[in-house]
Image (cartoon, rainbow, N blue to C red; front, side, top):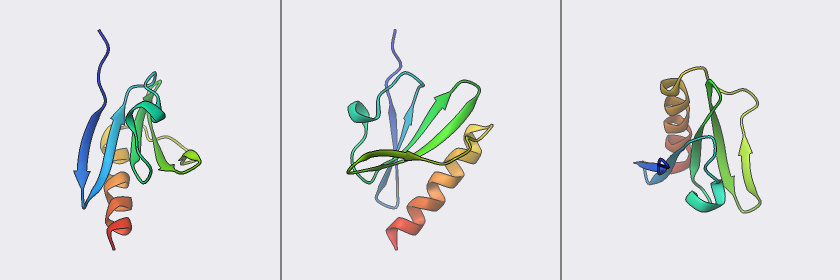
Length: 78
C-alpha cells in the first residue's frame, strides 16, 4: 500500500511531506516546499517553475527539516 503525501499549510505556504519514491511533479506546486524522506535522512526542496532545488545536505531528523521549512515559509510570507 502506498503512503500518500501529506500537506501542512504554514503562513500560506504548502509544506509537502513525501516518501522517497513520491514524485515532486505529482504532489507539489510551484512555490511549495517539499520534505522528502530519502534513506535515513530528510531532504528539503523548494519547488519552482523549473523543478525542485534542494539544500546541499539532508537533515538527520524530520523535526529539523520541518523547522527549516517553516522558517523558509515565514520568510516567503513577508
